[in-house]
Image (cartoon, rainbow, N blue to C red; front, side, top):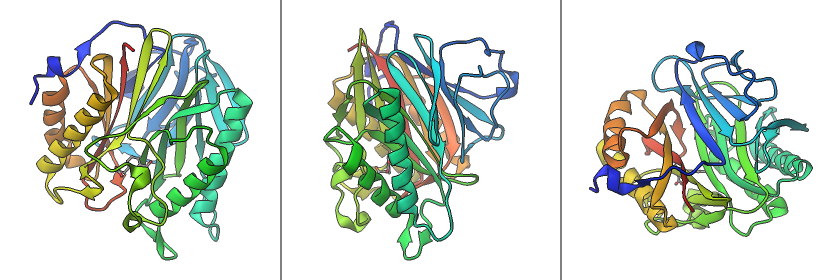
Length: 335
Ligand code: 3EB
């Protein structure tokens, strides 16, 4: 294993946007006058009073792996304005837009139709806001592996998302994404988009998700393994949810150390494929099927990426039942 400080060199470039994962939300200092907050996501918390009024907030249907709540805050290098269109609430800076919506699931309406309509509304929002290119989606669906009328909800989700992408996505390849199950609340989608496309990255150790064989469902999942967005002097790297999958097959069933090591090998492979060698900040979100697995994964992540990276552990349901964890990442770096 590479020593952490050689894995990714540090730089000091000012990024377009930064993420903060906050625990102890109740003890956070007031930032209601901060003009540069792009968006916030709550895990086991409602909208905190200290968020500025312009800042969009969505409650995700996932909780932190430890007790208590957590908040994910996206903050930009320039002032933001609120923007709302249809069911999507968001905000934008000069360079980026954040948006979020919950999905009203109606009995008798197939999930794929609900998801297709949600994504159509997101593209309407993007057209209205004047940002053409989604960079990164987060999809949180309670009961993601539950069967509904003979087809798993995740498989139905993939059908609806791809229908909307076929109709509206301008780029040939899909954005980066995470697709994770939650244990309470309402399905939610949030995203970041820009005025120009990101560079999609694949993982040479893995079959592209959009090329998975039909054994994983009638519609393969529409996401790229990562997306690198460059603007001004900096680059942003969004790494999709990454799991213990080699080729297209899950590895190390019921083996936490094995899945953790394979997932980290996949993260390294996708970072290397992007040619990223310098990072200003590293942030990881870790989805755990069993919150008790947190320490084992944390020790391995620190060994791989150093103790200063941000780490937010969430209790989530990975969309393959044999997988125990999934890790996503956001890096800011030099171009
Ligand atoms: C995988 O590699 C694991 O459907 O948007 C990871 C990231 C996964 C994103 C999605 C699914 C998604 O297939 C699952």
